[in-house]
Length: 345
Ligand code: GLA
Image (tube, rainbow, N blue to C red; front, side, top):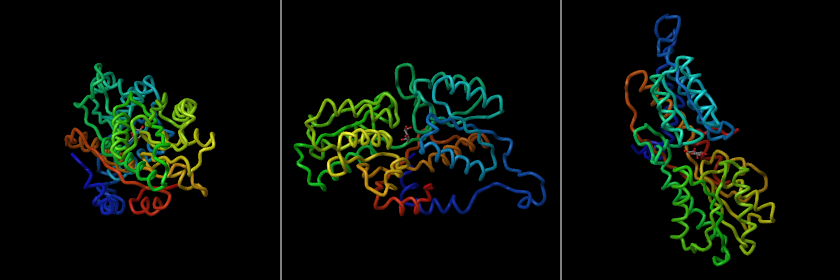
């Protein structure tokens, strides 16, 4: 199921829909004097995320919480940065009587083990953001998933980079691309493969597109990856920077700044919007020019809602739900975030 139209064509309406008109939490007043909410308050559901320090996941949790409040169930939020923590989190959820969980796993290869454990406890599972893979490294399409349209998002990011280089009137034969990659993760590889495709279509020669593989998907991971690349290519005078998310681009840009590159000689476009905002807020523009804004709020709310309806009413969610994004930059992010109801601290 494509949620594009749902999210973007009527995003304002949707925000008004769930922001101002909370659904079915029936309170004592609403139900004529019962002392407790009569909605499914016995239902407990888990929400496990791989990187609780990343704003993307904080917003997912925030809106999953909102869903729990709206519907009247209990949400148990658990961070799990490695496999042991994931397994302990599922045991913990079972001990607390949870009937299922949404998960963005720290390692997609844990998929079969996570599923086995969940099935053993009779829990329902929805993956969010990152899809499980099986022992042959194939996506486990039998697990219900909510994620982004990685190919379209990648294309948009790549096109944006090409346009920015053209706007800057850089000599195209002196432009290099630092593409921060993390090929172990399907959604990351699809994003960066499509960034590259759009760059090639936009006229950047293949020989000038350099991959910088991240060991970890955070700012230190991309900073290290870009530093290696920069040491190998001192001849490049203008850099475009792309990657699977905002932190991939922010880390690489930091590495470039340390070597004297400025917004006049280095420009990056992220994906998520949630972390790039910190760059847009800075008084002085950085090389993180823009980002494809994705809906962490929708991912959080919708994945929790789908799990809740599945557990409570047996309403099975679609197998695959995808979202799309739009470009935000320093110039328009405040208006866009406000319009879409995405919180900014
Ligand atoms: C992955 C990334 C996150 C975010 C989500 C979006 O999990 O690590 O930063 O981009 O995908 O689905």
